[in-house]
Image (cartoon, rainbow, N blue to C red; front, top):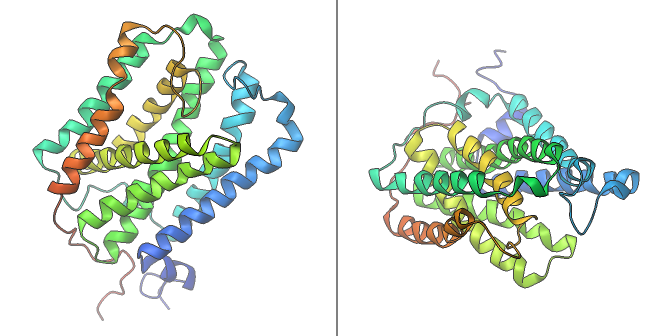
Length: 282
């Protein structure tokens, strides 16, 4: 039988889409990502400077980069196995509205301000390089999963764009609740989840208005490392004196929340597209 008409059970299962399959895949990804960290810890955990992960390039690579490599490989293997690379990076099936440009505009503004305001002299050059490269992995993994795979699954099951936006952003936010496993205070974790939900909505708006998944990946790949280097940590506020440029970038978090609230009111519509693997008419 023709595989295009009769896909494998594996492909057929995932091609049905739906919210619970999207959540299942996100859980599987986190299990692989966190599992990689648990394996890496006993083998090379002594290379990580727990109180300052960005002190040495080895600390960044072992403590952050290596698990992301495993996660990216797993996601790429999944996307390849179901044949979704082409549809994920195809032009978006539903266009964005003019007001949605506020999301990428303020994301780019924060990235530029941080790039210019980071105190590079406080880091080894190799730490800056590996952190920026790690950002590419973060952008790929988190966007291909949430704004790519999850969005596709929800659209293929017929969900409205409002539901697609909210559920994909909620999945993105809940991924960051895993910070609690590293000992982060629960209040900080909850604040992070709220912020990442708003950030996720801004990335969804970026996906809509730019028309292609590559742009959320690029912006996310630049946003996180510049945030890490400007604050000196992951999901934490900067301590001590800051450059005026970093102070200007500071209110960005509240701007993203405001844009998210507007999006919750304004976003409407459906993506009128049949699932990728729907059998061809005979």
